[in-house]
Image 1 (cartoon, rainbow, N blue to C red):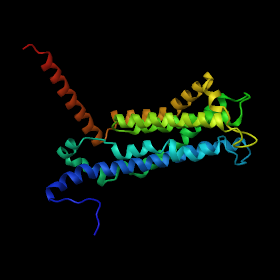
Image 2 (cartoon, rainbow, N blue to C red):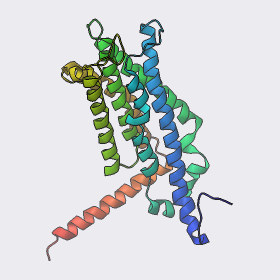
Image 3 (cartoon, helix red, strand yellow):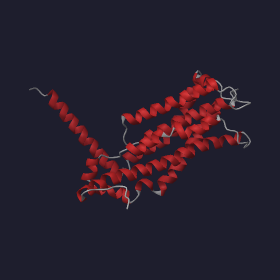
Image 4 (spheres, rainbow, N blue to C red):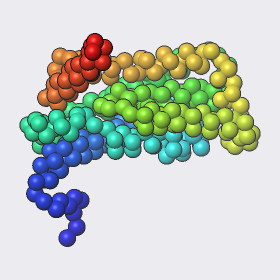
Length: 273
């Protein structure tokens, strides 16, 4: 018979169940929710454009960007999130075994959380597309120039959304986020410099370079990102302060203990000998 875990002694079952069982379920549930959100948000952005091109199916970005957006640019951060994220420490989980009830009740993956995630993805895609679209309304920019602003905005929205949902941040998380951004812009500039006859009659030649030299591009990306993520951020703030779950309460207690310990250590260092 095969099993996911093997323990040599029953005394290890306590940590396996209360700690790793809690972490694994929470990580898996949050990662599934995020993948549904990420895919729906990006596809919805492409869908809203169809109302303005006669439902011809013509995308506002080049085909390579469509292929690599989910495959390469935004694939590694959720994997790291699903592997390393910890909502609470192992010591606290062992000291408070009642926290395991959250996984027994499937609180991280209830139907309301799934529905809210889908609604938020649709809202973010609407905010991203229409802010970019209305900002360039009446201008003479091309289809790929508009698509560059929309793609960059939704790229930052998706990554920063993950930061809001992350319970713990390490240098690995930040390195992966920065690496994804570097990869995204590097690819865009390479394609923009070399892809002259990729999608005739239009093509993404020098699109990224022109947009990066335009201050409007930065303002549009910042505005659409803030407007799209503001409701999610406020919801998490209210949830953590007004309606905290048992896990959130335990995290707050854990933070106070750590802060007290740090203050005690500092006071010992500065105390006269």
